[in-house]
Image (cartoon, rainbow, N blue to C red; front, side, top):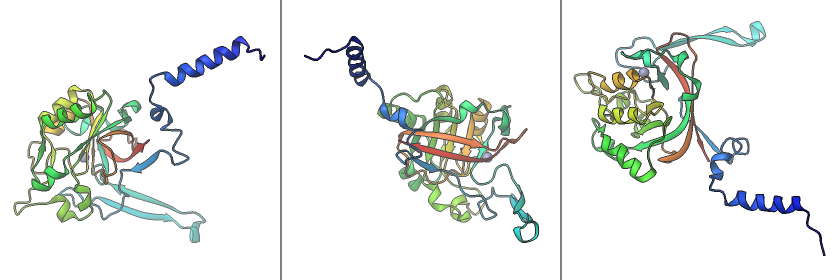
Amino acid sequence: MAVVGRSSIIYVCLTACMTLLPQNPHKDDVLEGIPSGKTRVIDLSYAINDKLVPWPGDTRWFEAKVNATVEKNGYFTRSFWMLEHYGTHLDAPIHFPPGKMTVDEIPARKLFGPAVVLDVRAEGAKDSDYQLPAARVEKWEKRHGRIPEGAIVLLRTGWASRWPDAQRYRNQDAQGRMHFPGYSVEAAKLLIERKVSGLGCDTMSADYGASEDFAVHHAVLGAGLYQLENLADLSELPESGAFLVVAPIKLEGGSGGAVRVFALLP
Ligand SMILES: [Zn+2]
């Protein structure tokens, strides 16, 4: 007869209890699964060059110059100049009043959070002036639960498929007014109430293209949140379940700047 020690019994009980505990094994494995490829990493930023879509009226947006070459200097370096709001970029609260915080002052913990994806590709295809109503946010919550504090909300309009064709992406009319979907100020206010960290979109602006008052910018940035604009193709993201890592340039005093955004898919 085998003698089972007390410690073995405790060990067996603990193991049994742990497997019964209500926990999400995926959640714990997200970071560990990156090196093996078990967790997929999707880059939601466009590479920066001089051929991206600038805001209408911008006359200069990006320039790069070679300063040293391997042939001449034994090493390679460049210097570059670019607008803070060009390509995939982050709008810091100070970009629009009454926002105050500069890009370097955004707390690091606000740059990590679960992704809430609001899919309006069908609506945007029918109406390029579509503004996401607050009811669409509530509809998402009915399906996936209340939006958690610290979430990062992404508006998926499908506009990334037009990038980098400036004419189709900006979609300007004869008067020069742009037409692409965006958040309504009511939806933005509801998301601010939910205490999300930021709002993003796969268009040029969190406000819809034809906006003249930038009401969403004032509300969102004024409440101390940040915005992510010109995000790359969001089509591979689930409506719920992805985790975002937002890494903006830490430019002291900046109104915003180039940002690298990664989605982690367990
Ligand atoms: Zn911007």
